[in-house]
Length: 114
Image 1: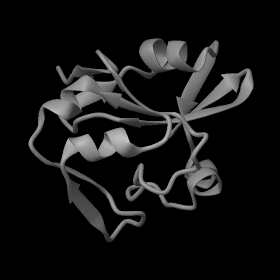
Image 2 (image 1 turned 90 degrees about the horizontal axis):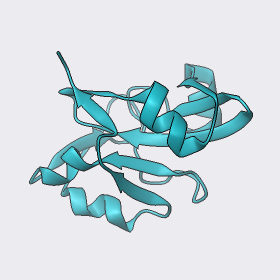
Image 3 (image 1 turned 135 degrees about the horizontal axis):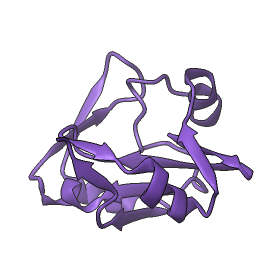
């Protein structure tokens, strides 16, 4: 979960491979149209999603919340996502993400880890 600080009130969910780093300060900031963004705190994440950090799933998020998916995610046969809490995980085909309201596949949303 990423939130805007300037202006306040914008939010999005982002999905990237564990072998990459989300480009929060450039790509995500531009997508939100904000001047300053940061990862949501644990409290803000629960308030926005009803889920705890370490288990947030894109399934069941508010329908007006943008879900940005790094294009590299779509190259996998299956992906493992949070299941709504820290104890559960979901194993799905990446194409399931395309059924979510407001989901969008974004090129270079994340960069490989050095």
